[in-house]
Image (tube, rainbow, N blue to C red; front, side, top):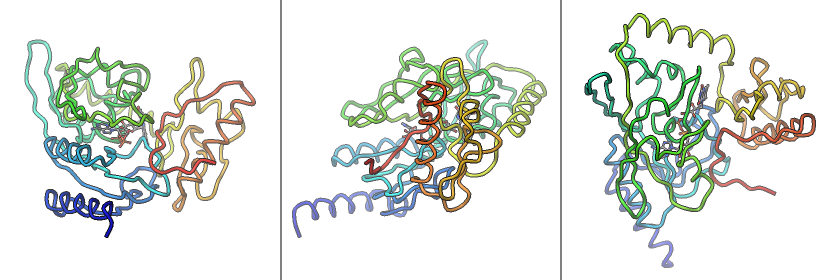
Amino acid sequence: MNLQTSLMDAILTHFQDTFGQQFQVNAPLSRYTTARIGGPAEMFVTVTTAQELQQAAEMAYNSRIPYFILGGGSNVLVADAGIAGLVIFNRARQMRFRHTGAHVVCTVESGMNLSSLARQCIAKGLGGLEWAISVPGTVGGAVVGNSGAHGSDMASNVRTVTLWKPGVGIRTYSREEMGYGYRTSVLKQEQGTDRSRRVVLAVELELKPEPVDVLTARADGFVAYRKETQPGGASCGSMFKNPEHFYAGYLIDAAGLKGYRRGDAHISEKHANFFINDGEATAEDVRGLIAEAWNVVREKFGVEMELEVELVGNWQFE
Ligand SMILES: Cc1cc2nc3c(=O)[nH]c(=O)nc-3n(C[C@H](O)[C@H](O)[C@H](O)COP(=O)(O)OP(=O)(O)OC[C@H]3O[C@@H](n4cnc5c(N)ncnc54)[C@H](O)[C@@H]3O)c2cc1C
């Protein structure tokens, strides 16, 4: 047995001893992404508290194992070859509410499902998150990507974000320190770098008391609009960000690519910024659609679109 193998065995044993059945090796990630695509995670752990989330990331960091936090898997395209190192599947969902004069502050762990949180707030007569009523994924993923819809976004609700920074520890950031912009934040900008990423442990959201029937009517309107304009099926949501002055879906449609197919993936007929897995699509199929859409839109309209979805894992680019 060489040194590397025995080191790896020791690391695996440490994770197994700490997390028991929550820990797996070679876990297929297609089960955990909304596109139903993705090869295996070399190591995979499900965490159910913010403390476990921090512990798993800290153990990986101290063992020099790369780690990746997976929320709802609704904004990532995972490579067919999977992800090396540790994938931490975040199911930390505790929350509490407190009144602060005009507002109510909800403190919520980052693995909470965003749309379920929005529903619970509406039922309590707390306004602010109705836009999130049918946005898939977790609070953590939404904090990273500044998710938004219907004219609002995460930045409009965030009061503070508690982060664990590798090698440093826990710190609470104000909304201003999060560097929010259209579908971006300081955390989103860490993507694609070699640095170990900061981990969102919990968030404080500011909500405003409003009548339940008003909030419900607003949310119902958003749900109906989404049903009318967006396709069902397995996808990562909007593939590209809207370029300044344009809608990505409109550009892809005008480029003649609605219905364009690679393998078992196609560009939706209903909304051209949605790329649908018809059942057996691979990440490579979807990457083929991305390349085609990007190239044709650039050729026809001179617009270079930027991906909203993050490509993660072991991609083999030629
Ligand atoms: C059908 C559909 C509709 C959608 N509609 C919308 C919409 O209207 N508006 C919108 O903005 N988006 C939309 N999306 C995209 C997606 O839902 C959001 O971007 C969502 O907030 C992503 O959250 P997630 O938990 O799934 O993140 P994931 O996809 O799991 O992860 C995304 C990134 O965030 C990181 N991350 C996740 N959790 C943490 C954490 N705790 N700490 C540090 N990093 C973390 C991951 O490592 C990864 O880099 C849609 C997607 C689908 C499939």
